[in-house]
Image 1 (tube, rainbow, N blue to C red):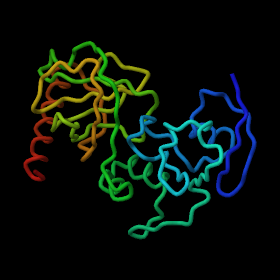
Image 2 (image 1 turned 90 degrees about the horizontal axis):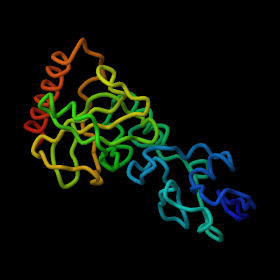
Image 3 (image 1 turned 90 degrees about the vertical axis):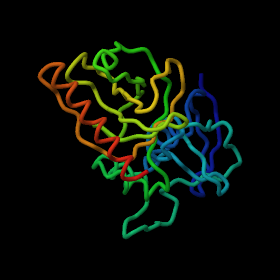
Length: 232
């Protein structure tokens, strides 16, 4: 089903016919060609889809365009450049920092650590059999990061996480976020978690069998604990 809407974006008013299920982010990118507003987590956590509506920041991945009639929308294309530490602040700069594994650089640009949120799904319980149970979150699209990370989970504390396609055992076609909590072993199935990424430990690797994988996970957990000892 489609509907007609009128949007004022960057000072220009346009009449559009769009599918009713589309988010403001999708309309801006797909119907208006304003691709400076980026896809990110699509859960309203990472901030890469932020636009200004009547001067206030709004997460366009969560906003419906039908609610924006009569309001003034500004995207990155309509904003003056903001420079921080010699770099133009933009969603592209944030993504570039994340893809390079520069989490601290991305945090400086965002003003907060990069985060991914999602609901914990049932998995094959391989991590538990290896001594490192994980909370598994299936991601709807590939995020701008991949590899092994030191993380913190809201209300649950310290952890180490993998973002990728699990190349050693049971590879997956859709990116998966697997979080091993250092201080908890609770049943989290069905729970909604917000995971903040603090430091990248390494890239995702394919190992020759489960013993090598188990040893690598143990090293990752040990390095995560050392990180928290250094940083509190």
